[in-house]
Amino acid sequence: MWAGRTGTLLRLSGWWPTGVLGRRLLNCNAASLAGSSSPRCWNCGGAGGPPRGDRFFCPQCRALQPPDPTRDYFSLMDCNRSFRVDTVKLQHRYQQLQRLVHPDFFSQRSQNEKDFSEKHSTLVNEAYKTLLAPLSRGLYLLKLRGIEIPEGTDYEMDSQFLTEIMEINEKLAEAQGETAVKEIESIVRAKQKELTDDVSRAFERDNFEKAKELLTKMRYFSNVEEKIKLKKIPL
Image (cartoon, rainbow, N blue to C red):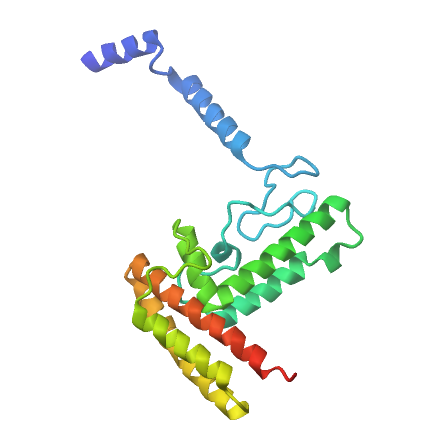
């Protein structure tokens, strides 16, 4: 009896929708809210505009949509957000996306689609390049967590490490002949492999400060690698 009276009072006060009509109003309002927040196509106004998942094209008019600004590189390249990446799968995904959005396929389309294809293609190239190399991949992972390492910073590197880098640079500057350069290159490659393994473990443990320190060291060795490439170019 009390339940019936409570229900009546709630209905009279407007807090309890009466019968099917009340439920219908709620359902219609929810659907309206959901529809208003869904992206719409720039060309035909249909629902499902900016790409979700792999939907780069409007399902109604098939117009290419602009890139989704909220999508990170890992999502775009269909990779788990992890330091460990399957580079073969990454390459296949890169080729798949370029077959979809490369500007060559939009030469006869509208100017909007030409512009969007340029943006998509550039974004795919940047994502692929970033996730392919361990150093840039690690730096990007940190960036997604709001952690950045400014260029030119020593990040409180210990003097022993800085001395090691200085000595390698001096040896490289003094190196005469291909054999000497290759020997230094081999040392640097081994150092980078060791650091890459350490960075992977740091990310697996969510130790982002350690990952930051190790990636800074990798960046030092990456600079040495660039100098080695220049050294190998014949004058």
